[in-house]
Image 1 (tube, chains in turn green, cyan):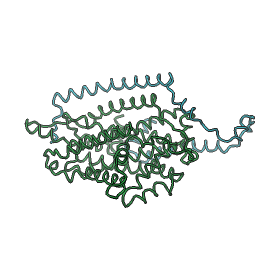
Image 2 (cartoon, chains in turn red, brown):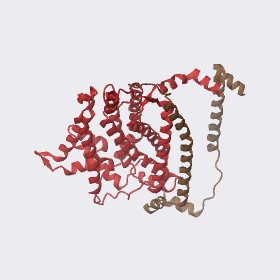
Image 3 (cartoon, one colour):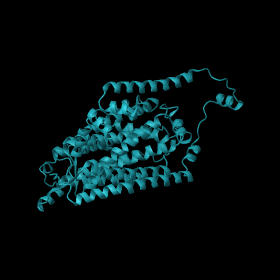
Image 4 (cartoon, one colour):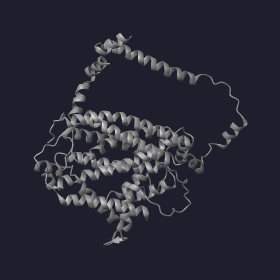
Length: 358
Length: 116
């Protein structure tokens, strides 16, 4: 066995890879818990790739066949219901975790120099994961998916300047139909996974290069007490903790899949009017609720356009936080950006709850 | 064979090529066999009246109630879940030894690397 390892080392430089992995040090302090989110997200992504590939064997992406192929997966394919349900719940948990990762990073100001690019790639990953969720939600092509197609592409259509182009590009024409389903399928199984993998690789390389960020409060505390902050090597020590977390997460996924299997709504009936209470999936409920509160016109401009523009501006400010938040860059406390993070979190949670209940 | 494998992995590039080639021949022969089997003449099959009727009616559509039935929680699913959790807890139990050992090393000051 040792000979075999030696031989592999000689050929692919296993030692270099291991020493690089050992070089990464995870700081140990009271906020170390947040460092686990990244590994869990990576684990969920792997689950999504595996279960997604399994579903691809049976899913038929056409308006006439998509719904029945999903029904077949649920009823006829051995363990099809389980694979689909795990795929469904893993995507939901991935979005929950990606938001938790985003808010924790924002609140502990982990975007400080020299991690600006890590933050920007992280924001890109967040957007990609949200689009992943939305495109996956529409693929069963049931009644709910049909209206999600309409509402979502309509929203994209209100974006200033590029809205009309986006609407036509996403729909593959003027109205929602087979072209729309084909486009969302292509996005879901090819464009988004490839983009996500590319950005993820850059994100991971940057984390490896700069190491984990330490919150300003921990740095100040250590400075005041004249203490040093110690860390553990990521490999193999933190990996054991990650393995335990991933095992638990897999158990939770399987439990959710068994007790609340993925649903399939009624088939599309184009002659029927839109059912009451059509809503987007939970992760876009906050956007939906904010737009719902907008008046029809704001200073003679359509309320929806104003709402979307406002949300884009807010998202841009948060994305550019590393370049705007000067205090954090000097390793000083920046209450303004802490407040911005807290307000964003409250808006996200409260609007989602109201959107769900209304 | 083992000696050959060890030698190959340790220093011989020629043996690597030979083994690679042998593996490739083996895989291709398996694939070829299966392809050949598909191309072989079909045995005459007698169709039943039911099968002919099904063929005429086209593909059977699965109703929403069937999907809802497939979503039901069955005892088998619960047993499967219990089994999975048992394996997970056993794995975590074993991993905890490693983690405890690791914590001990941490307390003993094994990790002296200063991060900042």
